Image 1 (cartoon, rainbow, N blue to C red):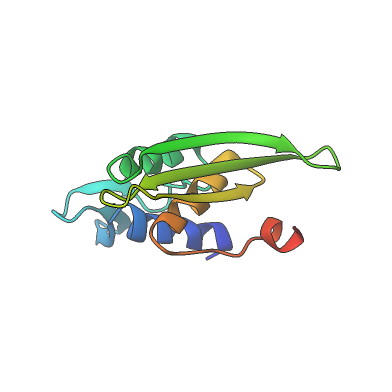
Image 2 (cartoon, one colour; image 1 turned 135 degrees about the vertical axis):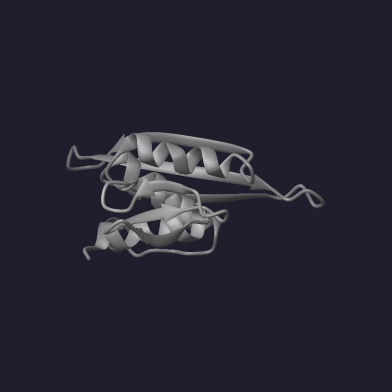
Amino acid sequence: MNDLQKIDSLVAEKVMGWKLNKMGGFYYWVDEKGNDKARASTWQPTLCMSDAWQVVEKLEVISNSFYIGYKVDKNGKKIYRAFFQKEHPITTIIHTYEADAETAPLAICLAALKTVGIEIETEESNNE
């Protein structure tokens, strides 16, 4: 399993709340009721924007806002930034969970994992 597949699995389990289940010789992600949500080998939110957008929609329940954009670094390379914000219901303190990555889907996944308390070290964060 490569690093992106590990992140995909973490997102499925920790953000989406899915569990891995084997059905008919294939592995599927299933929800808490056992309903199949996606085939594990093809659901790739770190690579596929439509899969990453499912993650954004899942976090609408706990996030007050979401942003995706990009900046160009000093070498002319595009770096995508995603962030989710959550406002505490009592103190109204706003918590921001952001991540930078080479692609928009990966930035979304890394920021989403931060909202559930998981921080992944990436090459981008090590080079800053």
